[in-house]
Image: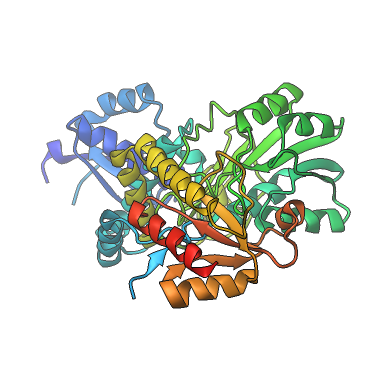
Length: 80
Length: 375
């Protein structure tokens, strides 16, 4: 696994916000895959977004700018 | 014999092709929505997510999270009524309500939890001034239908909304008969909550309904259970829509409802309304020529025309219309006993002939010809 594949996990209170975030992030060209929340993190809505660590700053500003609520972020993590 | 469907006020039929396609696709491609996180689970949740957006736009909700999927309008109305009233509240409603409003309110009154005022019919409908006159200091909620499911009589909800708003009283609007036929803007109407069935004018499948809740109105929990969110908490989530959506939803039906609303947007609500209006007026004019026929629907009603024909019981008339002419109507009390008392047709009821978007002029003419033959 190469360093540029390092990932971040973004959790959401509700699945509604996970799907909102996915739509917006993908529309802006960011890699974003929804997946079950890793058990060591807060369960939140059960679904989280897996994004690239290198995009995190931009993603967080975008989420804030668009009023997209998220719960917490975890990373950087090594992808599988 | 060809079937002529005139029971759209109960369930619209047939459903548009895109509704069937969306439901088949959802049936084939849905796991449990949003619970498991695998592709079929996420796919199912996306069907619901898209439908929530489509419906939110359709009713101009301030935020899609304020749209809750329900079993039907009855479910939505029960959630809204029982979720909003507090002990000692006074509630105002109308004689034109369906039992989905009357029964929850009467149950609350019988249990001593609320005081209830039911407004009478005046000039074929219920007038805004009647609402204003019924308000008391302890009035907390007005529940009104947008249009009668018996006569199609419309209530001036813009005026009722102004009255409620100026007195700080919550307004719950029952749009079961008007959703998909009349433009409904929940923000413009300053609604506290709005209930709509999915299977009537919205052209969706049965087993679907919509509840809109104003962001500042916190409905009491309706049922607790799995939401897929904050599963470690034993308490129901307090955020919308999870707050009111416990348990695995009707993903296939909701996908169909989303497609139905998109279809209505493509056709255009104005086009739907104009067609419905033209058909209604054609039917009204024809029925008024039938000797011995009494029409109970006021001028400018929706396409829900209630009639009685001299010499026929309403059920008998409905049976004859089907057996001899293939015309499908609904006789009886239409789950609205107070509306029938108000128009003087209780307990025998009326035969209700209701048009929909799929109705044609030829079908309307066939109904008029059938009535002429029966006299």
